Amino acid sequence: MRRNKLKQLIQEQSPIINGWLAIPSSYSAEIVGHQGYDAVTVDLQHGMIDFASALTMLQALSATPAVPLVRVQHNDPAQIMRMLDAGAYGIICPMISTAEQAARFVAACHYPPFGVRSFGPARGLLYGGADYPQHACQEILTLAMIETREGLANLDAILATDGLDGVFIGPNDLSLTLTGSASAESQHPEMLAAVERVVSRCRQQQKLAGIFCTSGDAARLRIDQGFQFVTPANDVMQLGRAAREAIALARGASAPTTGASGY
Image (cartoon, rainbow, N blue to C red; front, side, top):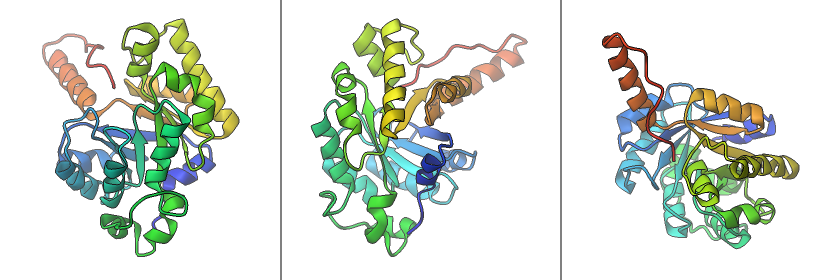
């Protein structure tokens, strides 16, 4: 089976730089996949992407060096299994707030006896290789999103879930639930404490700590803070930022620094 290089990077404690796709386009997926990202995530939750588009995007990513990941819409075993069958090499699952929800998520990602995934790997075989069924449980990456006050309270139990590789902070949702305002780079004391708690607990339990960021600079700061899996904005944010900068420069003005928030 094709090895999941993210697993190796985790073992080496090397930073993982993850691209993020919200625009339903196999062409843009192919472009992003060739830019040097370690992984690229196809976003079914907040992106404008349906299954048919996601399939073509995963096919495009499979021709690039980036590991193809998918963020599913919610903790739905049927959708999780379908995206794995379509060739995703990892799943990011939103709104995990309890250990029971984390266990349900992980079980959907693994074949028996480790989980409940139904057999029918389809594109998984094409991307992973003929022995995919024998090794998928070891190679598929599982990340649970921490986005709620309840999830933060249950963090230790979530991280203790067998087969869970780590957690991924959804900073806007977590900030919204903790402070009443959605801010990916919130400096509110409660948000700062929550972020530090996730990093320290992941370090203690030797699990991956990930977070969505608004820029490359913000991602660098998060790596310095202890995060190993960072997403330096998504395609929508990067496209808008590049357009604003080009327009400003053409008009002889300074490049703007504001833009769409991450999610």
